[in-house]
Length: 140
Image (tube, rainbow, N blue to C red; front, side, top):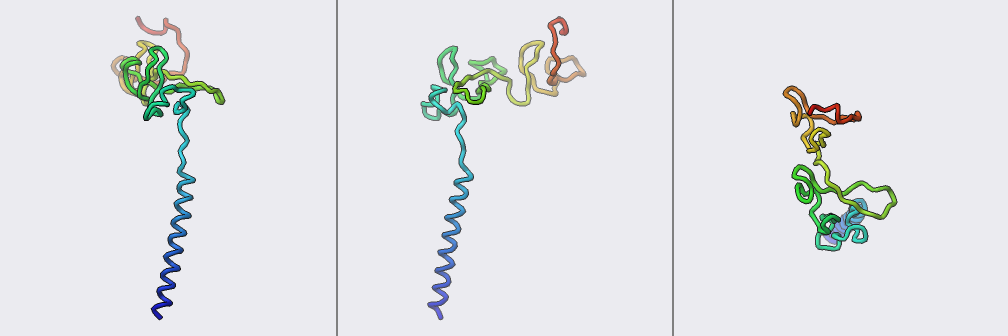
């Protein structure tokens, strides 16, 4: 009788190992992560360095900077970000951009947090404006 239970336990154990292996393969297949476009050394020379997928090439000075770094080489209130490119185009650009939850003011050119006073007068709040304006629309 003990032999029959041992065989049943062995079969059950082998079944658990098989199911675990199948679930691991499924997990690995579903968990694949595609590298970002700037991780390609052909379009971003910095990508060839250790942890290069975290670096962006800045053409004006030819140096590599950590992605989303605030300040230099960008203005103090902006971060270095990958620029949008056309689909299928094999080029890479970096740009200075306002960080998330902020926008650049057309009045002073600086980044300000959205829905805060920012450069606005007391009682007004800074928000995105999709209308086009001329310089005469702003106070001196």
